[in-house]
Length: 249
Image (cartoon, rainbow, N blue to C red; front, top):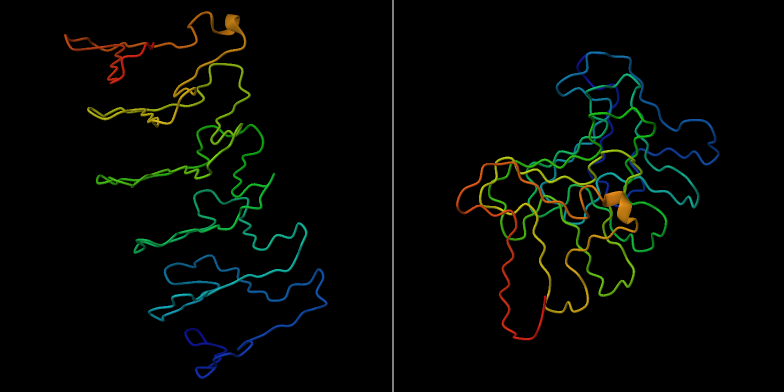
């Protein structure tokens, strides 16, 4: 056959059945429970090697496809292996264009993690050049209120010596560790730091160096401007609007 189905299983009346189609392979070692193999090079459009199609309109707590494991060691539950020749393809594509309040990818209940990593993106070796390991892209022009492209939200009350976000490098040359580029912004703020009224002995910004000679050329803080100046231009501007009259610096 070229257009029909070789095998069709119909179980429209099944409700709590253990499985319409089931494979028990309790003694499996290096074998494979199920194989779908194709050498076709012209799979396009609606062509698929595997498709799970749920056409039900609603499923408030439904789990349509699940991979469950009772393993307690280094088992990999789901693995996607791309060909070594894959260049411009996509290893995993999540499409949810109509989603509003849902979550494209959800990893919850990770409070027991210690030295593990919820997401690990690793470019081993030294061959990475202009590639980007993580790219968040948005063309939204109406991001307001609680809208964010990236949000790191720590709701823990205390952490005496915790570092919530860190940018770390072993580079010994002119590497820029963090860069903020605002080529077309006019009235916005490139970096905004909001403190709270409860801060007493802390610092909103702290720049420290344990070796003074290492920063002797440009200083610990360097502010440089190469643009054209007008009568209202300011390289540095400090505006203190304090209501208290106690001494301060």
